[in-house]
Image (cartoon, rainbow, N blue to C red; front, top):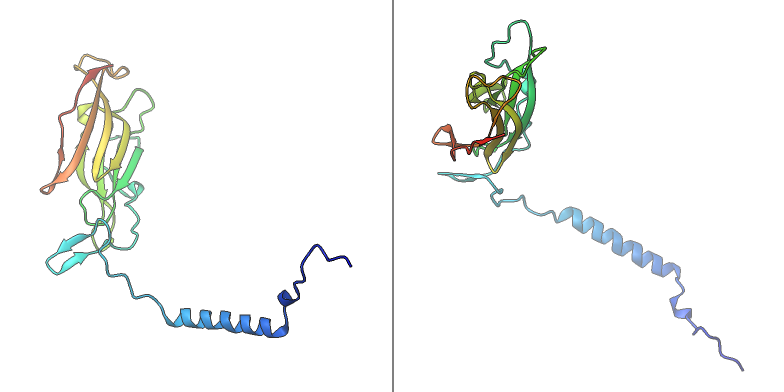
Length: 196
């Protein structure tokens, strides 16, 4: 007599009682999981602020202020102000994002200077508004890079070593960083100027 190559697995054949037992177990797990919900999280959120009453978590996701909804303090005459670059992040640690915008007049020729502005909105979610000027257009700078990292505004500015340098050809590069300290934006380190 020849033995089969595969052992007899008759004990593995499913019967209706197996299906009933499995369905009952799954239904029990689903019912139990809907009754036993975890408690609401009570830990402070990362970056949350602490008040006298205890930790205050950051508010739910809030959209950063839109620079298109702001009137910038620029005198552009017959042309419009254009937002060239923007970056967003929480600059003052209140859990609400601010927007930093590099803006210049849309001049048809030449290199119009940029202004770099900080935009925020009131805690009640009102209209966005400019709260700080980091770079005044009168200083004749062009912002080539703009970012917000670790609560600081960082910018690369092209400028001029003297008023005699033509607007087409900036000859100085500054890497600048501002942080919110004691109610004002302060440049942390003096910029290192280098000739281009």
